[in-house]
Amino acid sequence: MRSRGVLRIGFAGLDSSHCTAFARILRESEWSRGECGAQITVGWPGSNPDFALSRERVQGFTEELRGLGTVIVDSLEDLLGCCDAVILGSVDGRQHLRLAERIFAAGKPVFVDKPLAHDLHDAAGIAALGRRWGTRWFSASALRFQPELSSCVAGFDGERILGCDVFGTMREGEGHLQLAWYGIHGLEVLYAVLGGGCVEVRRTRTALGDVTTGVWSDGRVGMFRGLAYEQQAAGWGLTVFGSQSIQQLRLPADYEELVRQIVAFFRGGPVPVSEAEVLELFGFMEAADRSVCAGGAAVRIADCLGAVV
Image (cartoon, rainbow, N blue to C red; front, side):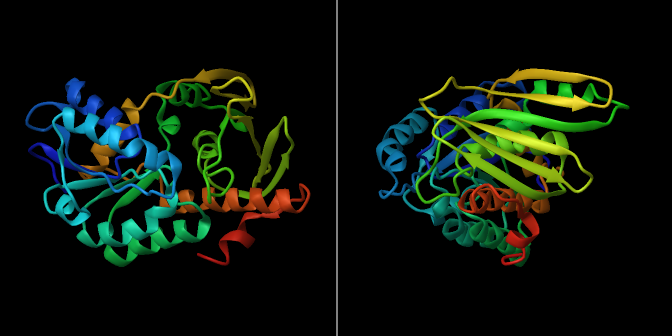
């Protein structure tokens, strides 16, 4: 546990806007300054030329991060040698297991930016690496930690939440589960409200709509409507159904609270999202893809997890 002194964060994979956004938050926020502050002090580009967004953006974000005072190094090993904690931020989730094999062995706490992996098999592989090396890690979407969402859930104090409908922008990543790359944001909101325990999933997909419904073990129902990227109005929001009231709200997609959670975790705080919940989310997404192939039939998450966990 590192509790004193400036926390030196290494950012591996500079092909996402998150590297510069997180760096600015840490430079500009009062809570991240001073002797007990945190900064992204070192970065490694680590792009994938076979993934268009990675190939096209890594140089620009690397230079922007350099301009913010971050030292850019030539190898992952150089990065691991001069930081206290690591953010694995490569935009292509297909790289994450391979990179995690090298990062987790260093024994430093790790945040893996979304998506944890491109599929359930690799997500389970990353979790296994964490257990093998005793490495503390977590992965999460910034949407999960929006203060507006936390206030909404807290407002149901003493009242049972019976279900939740979430909507959000859908954009697929090449080689990823269809919900993993952007749909994960909406699904994490769903899980932030309902928690773990979903048992079966049904998904309907047309040119004009993408709706995934999960049934929890206690009968609660959660739904995610994916809004087609660049074809529909964009944004994030939800409706929460309680035993006595209903709340609806739109959600921003700010990063500050996520960055706070990351820094607190790096300093020895609790894991914000458990390994079990992360893997269930990937089981949910795997079940959703199988449901589409089965014409919208229900698919049990346990059947998906059983092959890898």
